[in-house]
Structure formats: C-alpha cells, structure tokens
Image (cartoon, rainbow, N blue to C red):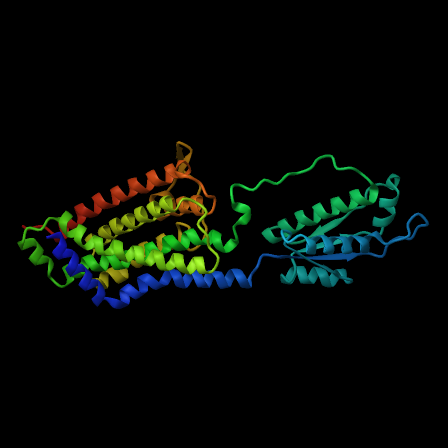
Length: 382
C-alpha cells in the first residue's frame, strides 16, 4: 500500500513541475545573489585624516602628523585583515560634510601641537579628535582601529614600551571563514524550508482532487498515507539541499566538520519541515489555500529564524545552557545553529546536542499535531 502511494505521489510531484522547479531553484538562486552582494560590498571602513598646520619648533624637524598618515596607510595596506581605507583631507569642513553624507565613516583630526607635544612630553598630551556617527557600527570599528594605530605610532615616536600584548586567538576555524560562508548554513536550511509548499501541495492535492476518498474507502491509515507521500518529499528535499550545497561549494563554501553529522542535521531538518507541512495541509483544503495561507509561515521561517538574514532573540529561559525563546520553537532556528557549528566551527556532535535535541522534539511535536489535524479533517471515515 505504501509503495502504491509513493509511486502515485511521485507522479503527482512530476506533474506539478513548476512547484518542483521553485522548490529546487530558490535557495541556489539566493546563494548566487548573496555571493554577488558579498563580492560587491567587501567590508571596508573609510577613514579621513585631517592634519592641522603644525606648530614649528627647533626641537622637531618633521611633521609627525603627515608621518602618521604615511604610517597608517602603509600599515593598513600591508595587513589584509585591517579593513581600512585611509585618505588625507585638507579641508576639515568638507570632511565633516562627507561624514554627514555617508561618504566616509571616520574623521580623525590631528591638532596643531601634535608634533611638538610628542617631542616634549612635559607639554602634556595632544588632544586627538575622532568624529563620526556613533550610531553606526562602521564608525565604531573604524575608530577602534585608528585608535590602535595611533597608539602604536605614538609608542614608536616616544620610545614608550607597550604595557601588554594582545594575542588574538580565533574560535575554532572562524579566522578562515569568509562572510559569504557564514551565510551558507542559513541558505542550506532555506532550501529545506521551500519544502513547505512542495510537501503541503503534494498532500492537499489528494484532498483537492477528491482522490482522498479512495484512500478512505480502502481503509488507508493516516500514517501509511503520510509515509508514502512524505518519502517523495524527502527525495525532493535531499535534491534541493544537494543543488544548494553544490552552488555554495562552487563559490567557496566548505564544510569544516563531520560530513555524517552535517547529513544527519540536514535529514532531521527535512523531516521537520515535512512534519510542519502536515499541519499546514490539515488546515487547508485546496492548492489555492496553500499558496495563500502558506506564505505566512514561509516568511516567518525565512526571515525570523536566521535563514535569509541573521537574527537573534533574547531567550525566555535556558535549559542546560541553551536559550529557549519563541524563535527556538521554529525548527529552522536550531537547524541553522547546528549547521553553523558543524560547517563553520568544525564542532563534533557534543557541540550540537542541544540543537539536535530541540530539532527532534520540534519534529515530533509538529508530526503529532499535524497527524491529529489531518486525520480529523481529511481522513475521517464518518
């Protein structure tokens, strides 16, 4: 019986070719879009330096303000990890206007007494000014970098030793991961989220075309029906995930963790989305209703779980150190978190136990709730 349902569901899936194309192509399409965005908007912070005319003194033979500009430009150019574009500006007012227009992120102003005070510490400390929009992250990061460069430059000029050294230790493989790769776990789960339409329509089609009546008369149980139809959707989900993974890999994405663990999380995510689709199928009676009502959970899963854009919600409470919130009740959230830990940070199964357990619990809840609703609305024999 399950085999017959599987074959019928497979034929119906192939008949709904446009739904299949949409399911398989949307996530790979987003992968290429995100790649283009990442390539066209490499993260750099534009810094302007305005050096006021330096006070002359017999003690100094050079303009240390101009020396600092050369030093900062050379340092930024020779260290690829420093995302700064440094430019000297001669007109302070024009520089402020550029800040206001968003053409630059940071303006550093070196005062007239910069050189003389560095040459003679008894005159006090030079007052360096940094201007920018304090509400923007670009200003905050740019200002921190310029402060660090100024600190190093002053130490070299004055001979003052460092009081400490910072040894930056990246978490796992995070130093090797590009911004594009950080987006990919969400894109992979997005390819599975698209099953929501495919799986729901595959189930509701039997109701819409009245063929569900034949299943009722043949005493088919809800579990048998769902296993037959769901098996086809598992294949669709795996194919969609594979196409998305191949697209991401061709553009530089790399799974740094266990392939088996990666596959397990992906498979559980597919089961979870098919289970949720069962709830949606139980609440609708036609393909038209699916296409209308299904948009609400689709957008919820896409934009509020971190699939399309990174988003984090403060937890209500914690269980074993894992935060629980309304966002956690959406199964793509723990799935994305788990895939990120595996593919980006290279963690083993110990590191993803909370996410996997959450995913299993949500999948079970979705399936039980969906089975009850679908059985009650579409498979009642009386």
